[in-house]
Amino acid sequence: MTARALSKGANLPVDSRAVSVELTWSAGPGVPDVDASALLLTEAGRVRDDGDFVFYNQPHHASSAVNHRGKEGAGGVLTDTVEVDLQALEPAVERVVLCASADGGVFGQVPGLTLRLLDAGTRAELARFVMEAGPETAFIGGELYRRSGQWKFRAVGQGYASGLAGLATDFGITVDEETPDGAAAAGQGSAGPASAPATGPAPARPLAAPPVAAPTSPTPPAPAPQGPVPPVPAPPFPAPPVPAAAPSRPRLDKDEERLPVDMRKRLSLRKEQVAVSLRKHGATGLTARVILVLDASGSMSFLYSKGVVADVVERMAAVAAQLDDDGEMQAWTFASNPARLPDLRIGGLPEWLRLHVRVGQMTLFRRKKPVRGLEPGQVDMRAVGIQNEEQKAIDEVRTYVRNNPAAAPTLVLFFSDGGVYRNAAIEKELREAVEEPIFWQFVGLGRADYGVLQRFDTLPGRRVDNVGFFAVDDISTVPDQELYDRLLSEFPSWITAARQAGIL
Image (cartoon, rainbow, N blue to C red):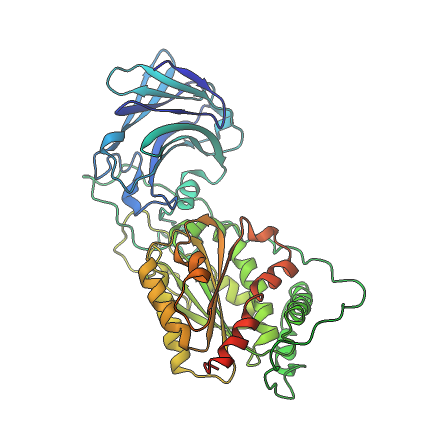
């Protein structure tokens, strides 16, 4: 195979049984130390556990298919190498992401940064990718990926300003975040106990996590609709009885006065937009219990650290404020296991976001000492884990609704970024839930592989369709009115069908 100089985004087939991936750069004064690493990803784009991260503190994968060989220097050029035996990779591994991190500076200070792909046996160069960087402290140089049984290589060239820890958590790795006194911090990032295999002596240097980014400012609200509201068709079902006090919701309005002015204004506008969506679907005056379920699996870390999940919760609080007349929204988080979060009251929204909208303690290497720094009511997210077990969260919500009956139907707003793999168990739970007064609205947050969730509308054998699903590439770019229209598009029709079937 003839060597090729690749540009960013280019790819080529790899026929070699095993390859060496060499990261090279020129040494010199002020040049940061650079380390190569690799992430083994499944089809869902995430690691299975922390053992799928191969780097200087964990140089050998348990399968022996990927190994970090370390640095060599000659003639002022430094090389750090990762070897990948493509034939030995487990069938579940669909991608090997080839990364680098800079210690003591940024990649813009690293001259001659180049990734070379070589045949591990013959040492023939297969491809070369010269990378350009700026303020990044971590970098994805390229990736080996499987397509129709054939391995290929792609030049990526994507930088991260949050260092190796930020890059790793984006793919589901859990990372220790140390507070000044050495305790594990209760901040953003992937959750769950690490399961990396033992690799011999204690690591020479720990992987330090970057400071946790504060949630970004919520997406500015869209302008209020101008002009008169167009006539709305008569509702397709009789409006449910609404207590006389419900339209004005005096208790909620009083509670809202506790909010900061800017948040109160956003909430007020968003409640109006929820009301508009209800009118569009012939559901004016509808009352419902609203339950929120948040994916906290490893691949969600980026959405937490960037404030996307916090913004989602604030937007969903407006749905509860408009629909739910008891002033509270029940909430769960889940990954390998579900965990009930404290109920969200509208007036306590800012503190609720601070305390509960996070992935949790980051633990790249197993920690045996107890967690310190948890505040009352917070969940130790290490117990929640990092994998996707939606069926467990669905079961807990069903149990809660059975044990806490309400006059109004229940709307579950369930957010996940994909990687669904317990399809049979999820389908069983949702089929059994058909006879219960619950509508399940699932929202996909931009990754892939939503499995049975996106196929449920076409599954036969149910008396009523009790599941809605849609996915968005970037929910922060979806205007409030559009988001509420999509969230509430199927709920009213389910109410009609559930009444006709005697479920409500």
